Figure 1 (cartoon, rainbow, N blue to C red):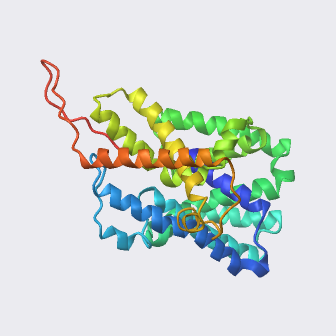
Figure 2 (figure 1 turned 180 degrees about the vertical axis):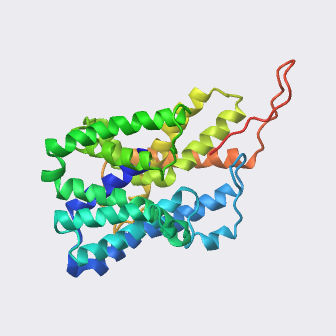
Figure 3 (figure 1 turned 90 degrees about the vertical axis):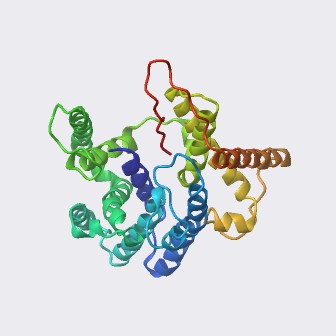
Length: 333
């Protein structure tokens, strides 16, 4: 209900701070292709290569999937395909002036709801199905910024807050089996709950400074978190540590910290910041001391070495407790 809607609403809100000008649509889309599709090709390909050798994966890809990756979504990288399609749609709407007024926005927003149930949701090529899901949330983010005088009014925000509470409660009752209601991401309760909750969080949510600083690295965390979480999971399993709480705690920390360190390193060199982060081909102004840079490089090298060891050695066999049947512990990336 909240994770991807919130991420996408924030993307729409940030876009609305600097929307595309009608004369700059081509330059805008080229910039988004660089920002989204280059990391898709580089980090996405690296993900497939590592996953073909990693143990205990949900589904082991083939190296031939490298040829499909630019056109068909792979794992969590579907979001990059789909978000680019959303940007193409938004650029067209902006060029036609469809989002200039609240009335036009409301009409387009209502039409985007139809896409959630349209046959286009079946088209996987270049993330079109995912784009149909994301568009309503991206538009909502634009609206929350561009038409805040309307949406932040008490007459609107009050019912939205009540809707957030109601939809969250209804979804939880559905998940518990108390109420027979569909609770998947495409369900009415999930979509409406995501819209209501993100509106309240945007206008009345708490401000947490340290999370805001981490948020500066959200794109890299989304792209590369799997390398940290998977390496930690395999390493802890090899050490015989099976505590779910510890796996979650260490996995979340690794999934956030490894991408942050990787971005700090990759951003220092013109070629890597272009290919892996989708940023301009230029050497940025050095931030921080050289000592920190050396530590960052060493940290990434150490993590890469640990991951390499983890994926090339089979996990140890665990002897079952006396009186219990032999079982294999199933883990997911």
